[in-house]
Image (cartoon, rainbow, N blue to C red; front, top):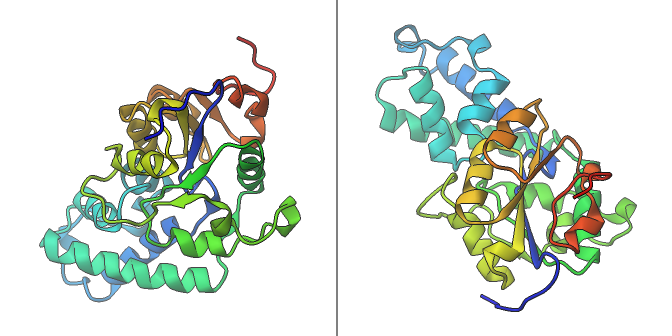
Length: 257
């Protein structure tokens, strides 16, 4: 990694789902499990604690969000006490993937304008940027975000200097491997970079890797993100003080130090 010293941040690393795009991952996980329980798995449904209304947003964000596909599937099936876990994890993950591809192709997602504005502003300030999502679908999302109305050209995926999303890392979040890899490919030391995350395990991963971290509270989880050590928590990326980045500070607009 580069040992170059600079007064401000030398790199920015962004999660994708929940940070940059309002993806249909939660819907895909929820609906694919419902289809399995009402169809191929109906014979074992009564042996589990599953009910459609029990697959809540809180369950998704606390146990599944930010994890690789197999880990997310396992977390949900363990929660509901589904038997024959190893075989069903693969089946659930494959069924969810088929559904997410369909939802993406139907345009069933949107970019967060505040986040895209922030990405454009950060790169325009001279800070290299990386995408780092556990999802193998991250590139498909980013390629479908047109930057024209944000004062840039091309699509959002083309705008990133580095993309490590969807790789088969040996350790998933909350392990920092994905962020450390992104920093290495950006050529920046972790202490000179910040991570933007919406999930608690993502903030845990950032802090474990000695990165600064912005928590984006999209689902009324300000306190949970702060409790994991996020340096600043916002409900919109517009609330991050861009001038603070040049001072190596993560602060909200209007905050003073």
